[in-house]
Amino acid sequence: MVQITFIDANGQEKTVEAEEDLSLMVAATDHAIEGIEAICSGCCSCGTCHVVLPIGTPDIVPAYLGEEQILEKTMNREPGSRLSCQVTVRPSHEGLVVQVRPVEFVD
Image 1: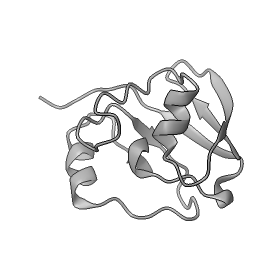
Image 2: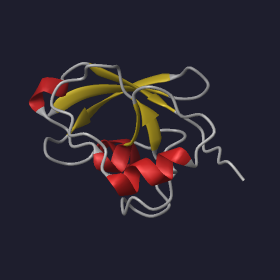
Image 3: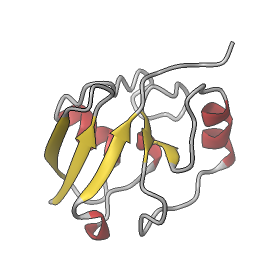
Image 4: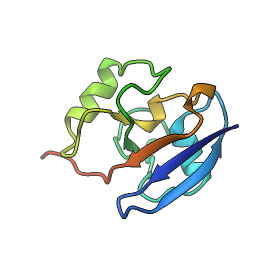
C-alpha cells in the first residue's frame, strides 16, 4: 500500500492507503474523497476525476490523446492536471500530495 494525500477544493486533507497498480481514482473513490465524482467509472470520458499532480511526479505515463481532449474541456486545467482514472499508483508515489479540482467545463 502507498500513502497518498488528497486535498479537496475546500483545502481539507485526507491521507489514504492506495493499492499499487490501481488508479488514483480508485483510491479516491474507495476512500470517499470529496470532489472525485468519477461518473464514467474510470473510462476517461467525463473529466469528473480531475486532479493536479506535482510537476515531476515520478513514474507517470504521459496523458494520451483521449485524456488530453477531456482536459481541454475543463476550465481549471493547469500544469500537472490529469484525470485520476489515468494515473496508476506506483511505490514511488509514497507521500504524493494530489490536489482535487472541482468539475468546471468550457461551454
